[in-house]
Image (cartoon, rainbow over all chains, first blue to last red):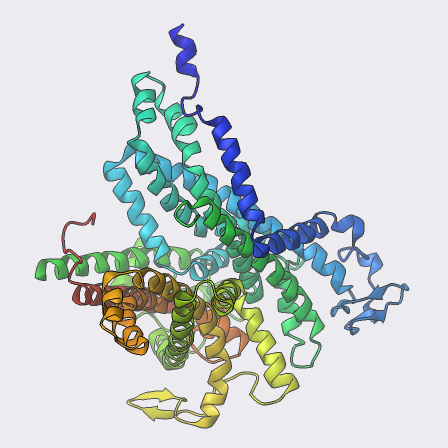
Length: 307
Length: 325
């Protein structure tokens, strides 16, 4: 009999209450016009990015579909193949709209992947640090402090110079830059959770340590993590585009939005504005939409701000 | 106080040493500069001679010891590209970057503080909401793209301002500065504004939060009850109390600003040390990259040190206790 009790995670008593809370928070989120606008933009752009191979006018990677004669046409021009390039074409004769849709795939993918991996690693380190405490905790927090005192752009720049170009390398450097934020956030909430009764109870039941950590403590440290990571996706996307602009980010064969902007930069002074303006607008829309939603999310999840 | 100073200095030295190790290892892994330096048809003997001349044939620990010893004497090696001391190369570009960053810092305070106070005093008003919403934009917009759009507008279409570069400089206190001439300002204004964009949003947010908190305090109510004009309340009571966190954050962010000039200088082809870093990375000019990272680290550590001291000086409530406070 005792066995069955020990295997059930304890912090489950408020599932119903939690669901009601979630519903209320969702309503709170939707009650803000800014957040709704952000959510709509975000969903539309994600849809365009995910289904780009199906709905984009052209596959910008397929050299067979490109014609160098179409290069640098202004918006609204008709291409050799009869297609209308509403946003113009780039120096290779690619339709900008298609390039942007494919570019968003790379940008969003890199941003989300790096945040998911970094938050998992950071959360684990943060919980461990709070749980073990003592010297280990002090050491981890020193490393976190040291890393956070240096601007992420500089760290990522040096790392990418070492690793070389490539999607996986960009994600790796972004993970390296971001894990410290999560470790610090999660450690903060884990320190509070650690002293609560349910952890003491779990310990009394002689549940294995890792189980207390992963099943009991970690889930209760997640809400603050969600807020940090939402905004962090936008940060990661901006950082990636900046790195690609500096020429150390994604490879030329898989252009992200930042890469498209970098290409457009070379033609900026000759007035070919569409090559840098439109990918930039797509980037700004994504980043601002994520921030609008994230900003509201922070307010909704933080009881101090709800009236 | 002396004990605190010493401990703080020890910490700074430790950070510098750690950075020296990390930077050295990282840059060592960058690849051999011999490939870049030797002419393509050089034979092995010539390449070896070249490696020996720069000490690149020695084992790693020996190279590091030599690097550290020289660094302590202010010698970070000679640039492979410019053929002179890497520190001197950085030093030539440093004033341009500091000038840009300081101007941007000034802009962000001049823009951020008034807007933040307005938004904090009237959080429900249209102006307040607009300021806060716009600050999200400033926060999250990719700066390099904004810079490009400013170039497009003011240089390509309107033709009012130059698209890049630095204006004529005059020597002020041994540094080449360009804020002394109108032409210099015309070159500086766009990069400085672009660089200030992020920080001014940060200042807006800080000031808004600070104002909202402070206006509910007793002493503000008392000042009102005393019949002081609202201008005087804001100027004397509110700003003074609000500025402590703002100054701290700005001080710390100044280092980040210097690092971010890497991006802004690339966009505006501004000949500062940020652009030099990108050029040196592309040319595998290892000593300059190392020198840049070490100089920036020293600047960071110095700024943090000064900010910490200022904090203690400004706010007597800060306790100089153990390390875990």
